[in-house]
Image 1 (cartoon, rainbow, N blue to C red):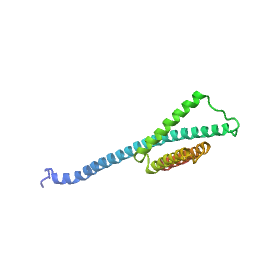
Image 2: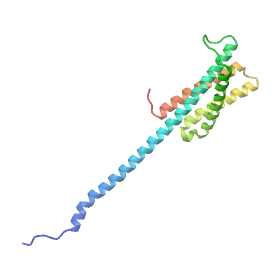
Image 3: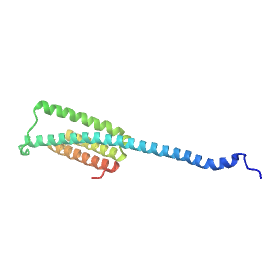
Length: 175
């Protein structure tokens, strides 16, 4: 009997090709899934930062609107117990920052559908439209200064609440 000493390439290829192809496919899929996950995590982080920055701006706007309303009440003798107006230089700096914040909201609203969400863009645009309407009513003397301050406060409070709710929902933050 003759011993079989020749190497059978066909047999070897058929046995090795399956595991090699499976390994290559596994490597490609692992790379694709990890890249996709990395991209989603980075996008989530950027969106979180955008919402955080915007919510901080909305909070400052609300606080200045609250301060302005309290000043209106104080000037009428109806101020809250313990409320004191800021010195003029502090109030001037506060209002200067307030107007920068309003401008930032206007700027952010232009890109919000891309950087945030369509709903966040609508929230911002609704807020800006409400402010525009309040200003129009005030200049047409359809609204008093105090009513204007109250409506500004309501609008900024609503803005903050809706942005926080949208951020929690979109970023899947539970609290």
